[in-house]
Image (cartoon, rainbow, N blue to C red; front, top):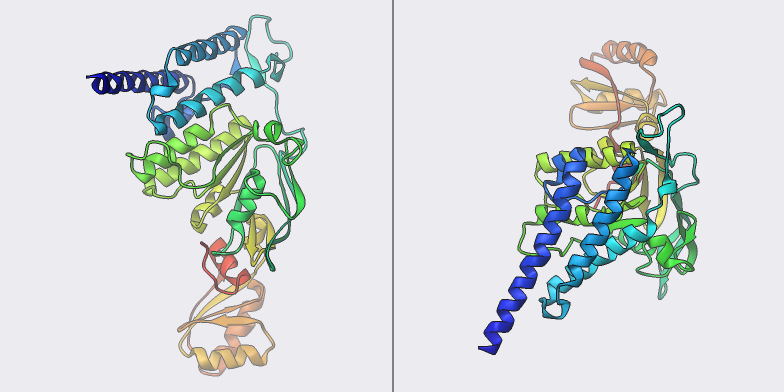
Length: 385
C-alpha cells in the first residue's frame, strides 16, 4: 500500500511537471508564430524583436510564477529522468530571470512613449564566438591542430569534416566539455575556461542526440532538443547534426527555423552536419576540418564559385582527355564527361579542337561546383561524417 501510494504521488508530480512544461511552451508558441510552425507546441522564447513595456513586465511575472509552481513539486519523488528535465527547465528559467535586462530594448526614434520597444541589434557587437588556435593532443596523437574561426551575430556557420576529422572534439572544446591542450574559446567576450558559467549562459546546444523524452522518435527528440536549447534565448546555438532523424519536410522546417533565428533574432548558429546539400542552403559560411586542421573556411557562395569549370559531354573521353592534356589544361573526367578548368569564353576553341580530331561533343556548359564536390575535392574524396 505504501509503495502504491508513493508511485501514485510520483505520477501526480510528473503530470504536474509536464503540465507546467506545456503551459509555458503554449504561451511562447502564441507569442512566436515563426517558431510555432517548426517545433509544434514545444517552444520557449523571451527575446522578441518588438514588444511593449507591459509585455516585458508580463514575461518577467510569468517566469517568476513558473518558478513558484516548480517549487510545489517534490523533486525527490520524481523518476530520475524527470529530475533531469526538472533541473534543466528550472535552471533555464532562473537564467532567463537573471539575464533579462530591460536595457536590451530601446524605443525607436520618434516613437510614442506608449509604443513598442525594439530589441537592440547585435550586429554592431564583436563576434559572438571566437576560437583561437584550438589544439587537442591525446597521448602522441594530435586530434585538433590549431583551429581558428569566429561567428558574427546573425550568422549561420557550418562545420564540416569526415569521420575522425576532429569535429566532435572541437565542439566539445567550444562548450567546455573538454579542455584544449592549447588555444582558447571566447563566447560573448567571456573565456570559456576562466568564466565558464558566464560564457555558457549565452549558449544553447545539442552536442549528442538529445536524451529528452526517450519514448519519442529520434526526429521528435531532435525537435525537443532544439526547443530546450532555445530556453533562455541564447545568443549562440551550437547544434551537432540537428537534422538527424528528420524526414525531408522536417529538415526543411529546421533549416527555415535556424535561418529565421539568425535573421530575426540576430542569433549566431553553429551547425555540424553531414547533409552537405542542406548546409549549402542553410549556412552563410562554412569551415572544413580534415585530420584536425582547417582546410578551407569562407562564405559558401565564394567557396563553390571559386572553381571555374566547363563541362563537356563527349563521345570518346580517352582521346578527348589526351587533347585537353596536350593543351596544358587542368581537367578531371568521368565515363562520358570532362570538366576542364577554363572560362566559358575559352570553350569554343576547345570544342573546335575536339571536333577537328573527330570527337563528338554533345554538350558544353558552365559547371557550378556544389558544396559536396568542393568538400570531396578538399578532403581527397573522403565522405562527410
